[in-house]
Length: 251
Image (cartoon, rainbow, N blue to C red; front, side):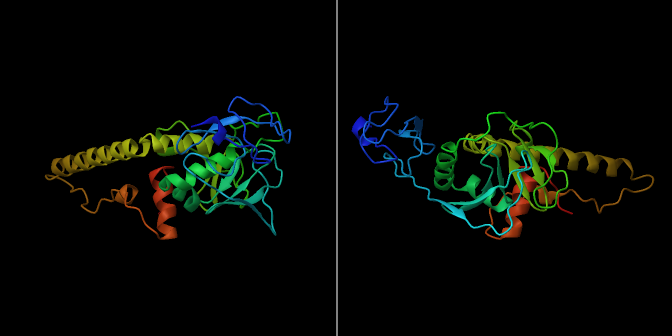
């Protein structure tokens, strides 16, 4: 990309990629990579000058702000493109419902813009919160479960199966990077294999019990954990995400 294609997000003046400050308005400039096409752009830019990815950021009036589960500050309610979430300005964490996380995992264009906007937000507190201990749900105040996304990503998320998912700063980018790298497909195949092994084991137990008390044939294999087809139904989307990636089984 020609250096002249880069422009200051503050005033729109042209600037080179190695410039640390705009010569026209004095804004600090930091070069980052577009999460969609990986072209260079300045942090805070609304558009990628290479692929055109755009996400509008809108602060929504919130009649009942929710407290951050880490630092207890009131979270902002934001609309980034088609995604609505809550963000803590102090620690940089995010609170969103499973449908929103599902859409970001499914839609590359939307998640690229969301990640770009979030990357430009710098937490106001320097001290990192304790992300190891259990955190309360902002909505119901019950302690959330800590779960390894897709059981193999290494990204430990805090989940309230009734209200939403909490992601500490940087965890959304790690989750979406895992999805982009094909991690979900690998995890799903592993779960299919485990299910097949369990079915074979139960079938062997049934065969061995033929001479005595018969094992009930009405064995529930929780096959609902392995429904991988996408759906537009909001309720099914919640179950798809939480079952498939966060390991929650709905009864």
